[in-house]
Length: 595
Image (cartoon, one colour):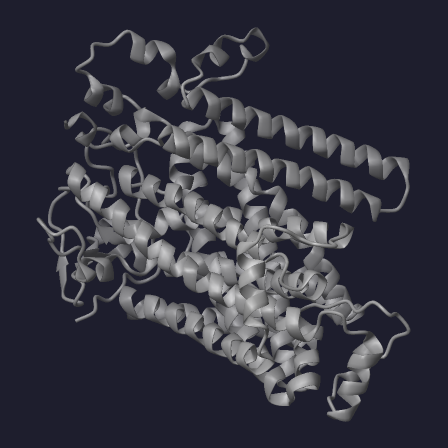
């Protein structure tokens, strides 16, 4: 029988986390044991003085899936099934409307030539998601909670603001995508502003599913992913792209005859695939499994199965992204606006006028892409496309809501009911969107999408650097600390992302009006941005073992968290690993001292 989740607003001390086995039978944990949070809302283990509470009105923390024992078995499908869920919810961020639009533009601008970059970006995303999941499994806390307990107050608040900006930016893209889907499905009878308002009501409705249990909630998200796979797969079969070209574009890292537009789109692919707030989400979702963190073998097993599950989930999302790229690479690439307009008039498409322009270059986005499919392959193709975009928008909205709640509680220890959190972020996201929808039009909504992609990319270092910092620290990860290869890969990825951000800023500045005040403001913001990134990078290098950076005179006024102090580890005996962990301001277990 599925366990009922805790009612909204009920204090954590009034109930105990429910535990379900992989078949759905429930039990209630009676003692602290290996549960990171005891019934009174405090951390068990060495740091019992650190106050925290479980997430209220959240199925993910009110219920735990029991992991079946598989001792002596190297791999068990039953155990994998018990761990299946968090990775698929995480993978939804790789399928949000922003990613869908990035995919179709890649195909329209560069045909199949950027598929290899999509594959590389997905693999790099998997590596970073692996670090995020490992942090949650090993520490029993998600990324925002670890940031709260380690970073000084001012950097912590700045990190929270940056993550909130990323969440709101993603939410705006989801609102835009959902509104366009309603517009297409209704043949324009539901105006854009009405579609924007509908996103408020439907989000609250879907969040009620949280009351029906963890497994049902995960099944619902899996259904939305299935809808995207079926709808975009249908379009893929209908368009029938050249399979040889698809495979060549996927595995040959080359972009023949690519110009500035293709280069800009290639840079955008990386920014669209790796979502900053998704790292915070994944580290929280893994807490839904009942892992005995007092046993090194149990933690190792959890890391192993979570990685397999995440790899499967991202493989599915990658296939869906390939479907979208290939659809427009085969059907849209090389088309002129007049050709598409004639096709639309011939098929009597109600939105044909959007292609009635004098420009030879055709801009493509989620809306125009759907109309094009309807013109070229029949109205059914347009409606199927709209259903897929609607599923992408709804699923991303719900996972964004969970992320926002985890981040707010982790960074600020603020425990809001989820409907309050939805109302806040959705209101912020809807206000500028509905103004554009009412006073401008659908073209301006897609322009806003471009700006949001830049904003999202700018927030990436504020997720990548904390994840790399904590997972590279022996004081936090013990035996599960990053190896040298992972440190190098993650560090290179972070440097590349920062370079991409600066490239985006340079391109975006060129589109702004030429005025000294605008350039001055941008220069100030860029300097502050780089200063904060360098500060986080400095702490990250110290965590990796470059303790000489602590002694630089130019940074003597900055606080180095005691957890990474050289003196803390140098002045201790070799057999005090557990004591080092217990004196950090974080809840830890003692498996780090197990041989």
